[in-house]
Length: 111
Image (cartoon, rainbow, N blue to C red; front, side):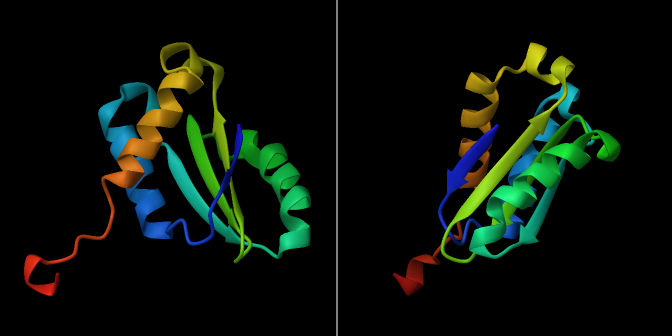
């Protein structure tokens, strides 16, 4: 699945969100998150390369953020056994919720 995302998605937040999903679901053990900086015209080409290379990485679930500065793309790859247990309509909202849970907190005294 490929999802268009805003620029500045946040590498650490993405890695932590994928880790939270992996911790919550046994079927996602060994899930990976990766970030690749690309130029805007390269988004389509790099998306194809990520999808083609997915089997060699061997992870049950992979989230690859392609950051093109002014726009981005999140390429999500999952093995069929993952999707049997956690279909996209469950997995994607859980990933979004985990990502939102990692929003930077503003200390009360700074508000």
